[in-house]
Image 1 (cartoon, rainbow, N blue to C red):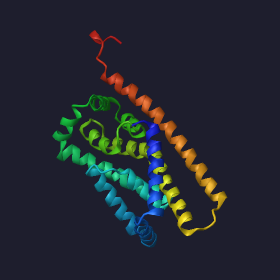
Image 2 (spheres, rainbow, N blue to C red):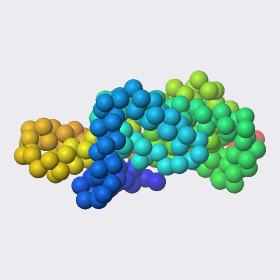
Image 3 (cartoon, rainbow, N blue to C red):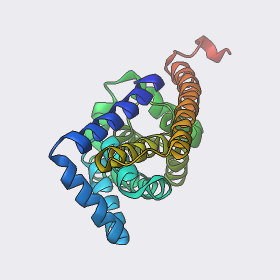
Image 4 (cartoon, rainbow, N blue to C red):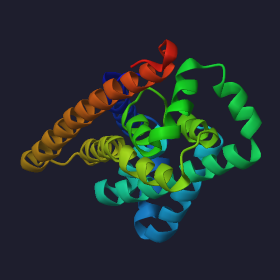
Length: 240
């Protein structure tokens, strides 16, 4: 998946959430969930993190949850709760892959050249490879969690690079969920729009999209170069 597609998916999902809230019976459920989350912030945050961890382990799509974080908690808290859930989910899947399903994961990794190159590259530069892979949208989050479990990357490097590398995409998706909530409230309540506030939110979202796309594009290019170099056969005699 290219960086452009990631941005398109975020925008599309935000539009779908808005449409569901405004025009479908699901609106009342989501509104109740948002109200409950506002009244029980700690319980809602804990439940959200637990669900995120479970989703990461069972390979369920987590983009919807990241959007939901923006809708339920707003931008700052949504980013914070999603970061906690995604990092803990990555850790849980990593341990499952390394200690409970190593052979199964390794067998499937071995059939994919890109994953094999990723495994080999982590022997020398684990932190950088994890960071680039998280910033690049080439390999989905839920698959990377298990892919790295059969590599030589140190758990400390894996966790730190995972947390840093996922932040741009988390901010983008949570921002999209926040905008969806604002538009849904504007439509359902029938209130007059605050052009100053809405303009700032829209400009901020566009800036976030642009920055995320630039970061993902650069990381994707560097990652492809690293994996291509790792996949290419070594010159005879070890010549440079």
